[in-house]
Length: 207
Image (cartoon, rainbow, N blue to C red):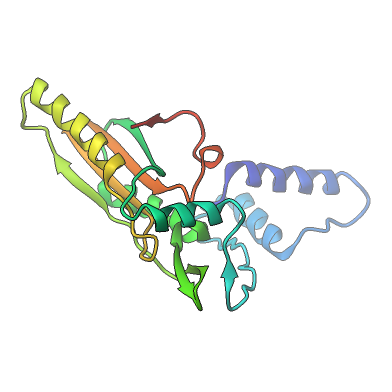
């Protein structure tokens, strides 16, 4: 669905032009979006895609990625650069919709579809055209409160300690802990080579 902020900007732009003697100069995409909004139609079927940039045959690592790859080569199997975050979800949860949302983000961001391959002895980024990430479900709802809390702590620890193979995608994994019908914990772990603290934000809990 089109972003509400974007929709408002389109409508504002239209009204500004509409109130002037000049003819509105909206792009075709914006015109289509506005027409549908004025007719009261939903926006889900409007395709507002961001064009993909052309990529060279060999995409080198960034300056930030290079030392992470080098350290991974020195310390094979290290989990020192795992970024594990947890979110508590309250309310009725549709796992299918959750996975769809996660994979929409994966589809949109190339870094989440990236692996690191060696080409002629040099590391390079390989961006997969398509990739699906599954939210692995672990049902803890039938356990006693004390055991359930212990299993949550173990899951957090295991996510932080399980290493990634930088040569294989995905370099991100998602785990869903069901505490009850109306309460879940979503764990998301990514290697620092495809994500960073600035992108992650500050409203999450590190393991």
